[in-house]
Length: 496
Image (cartoon, rainbow, N blue to C red):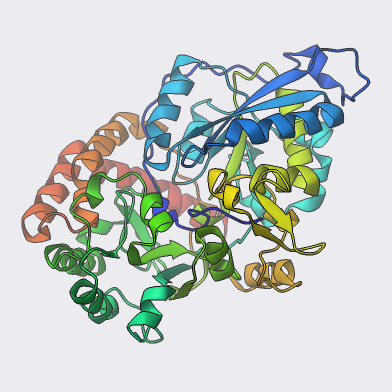
């Protein structure tokens, strides 16, 4: 079941582009014992796969993984240990884990969380082309080809993307209980400025509710596609010249930051927003009115089933297929994995086997959920102890449906994917090797200014010029120049 409070909120887009010192080990046949398909009758000792993934650590994760391991041992002679790292900590902790050689086989990565492209190029992930051909044929037959093609780095696959929504579309999400209670009209909401009357009404009527929920990863939506997620260089979605700009110097972002600071001063945003790693506590308690998230078909049903109360949404952007959306959820095999073949066998099973996929997503039948019919399930009270972010866990189109989902849900996904509009820079991946020193300095400046500006915590009249100057001092102009050179070459090569 598509549970998970963070399934579509990549307002979650996190940090990127640290320079890592990694020892990249090749794939090959590190572990001869793991090359077989395995079975319950095998005399070989089962391989234990260590899987690092993103999300608020769940109380019952070990209990569920014990059941998962019984199933996977029978199918491929492997067991699974899942290690969850909370949203706000994932980037930093995974950098440390990879650099220190922490044992791991499979890890979550994305455009915005433990940056997929940059870390693939730095050697954190194993190249998967041969492993896919030998042990991942089910993946290639099942996943939308756009995901596998769009997640290639320099012509090679370094991870298995989740088969889910392809475009990225932002929405405003509302706690419908409060909308109904005060008879608020959300139908005309679209821009950041348009939500102000609703925030004002809730602030006056519900002083203990957070009107505008967000964490430190929030970034106001502006119609640009970022070269690297959450770093200030981007191309306008309707570009004709393919010019990369500092997003902080655009009129759209300046206006958005001014509005955010006004909202912060009015008390619509929590005082600690710039340092909060997750809003999951607010979602659990229901003490929030609205936030911004990324959507997919029938997302409102998924959110409502997960939280236990009605959530409804309205568009905040068009549906655009970007590198961030194509690379929004990927499982990579560690370059230092001792069991790469078995890891690929597991990923193949996870993306093709409905029993395994639903167990990983929804937990144990009869404990965390119950079946309503052959296709639909609903949460049981214990489901709160295993509420997973579905988008990060594999092929979503194998999942059971929520109680209110129509039978054709996954057909609606395919239609949504087919109708998405391509970003002008879709499939362009910046190689920062030549400006690695500047990238590290730019990242340090980002840590200093980004979250406080984006959440409205500081006054942009004062801090925006300081941030722009600090980024320039760190070498952002040199980074943009190098990225522009690469983008121009890509544009010419692709007849854009």
